[in-house]
Image (cartoon, rainbow, N blue to C red):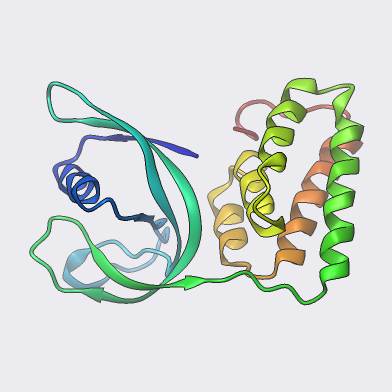
Length: 193
């Protein structure tokens, strides 16, 4: 889930178009320090998340508050010429890759064990993670939901977003949970959200 506050004119236009069409919305991260792309637009990563609007509220002055639910990953194929204030791209859906189903099953069980280890000292965190874990959509989406809570650094998040192998994403989650277990404490809000 991604809460957003839409106030810039280009994003207001984009959101109004998304509401009218009922279609998904792509969110790409800026490439820090990269040269500008065509027409002076900031460079963005080619791999990005796609979400569906779950709820929204329009304020009297035309701003929006919304909640976007991630539904898949995508890769930009090309940017389209348009008269819109916002960018429009043609993109392809990136499907999860699983090389070893037995390993994925074992990693999911290890995740469950990590949550049990954290339960005594950090019931609130484990409660959040467990709710995300229980939405039964498969191991790839489970890893993605847990990563949104456990990884806040944009570089780490982008790297996970670009990782198609489910085993690697699950292992990254286990590694992060293992760090928390080993430290015996949960970092402040700057490390988790």
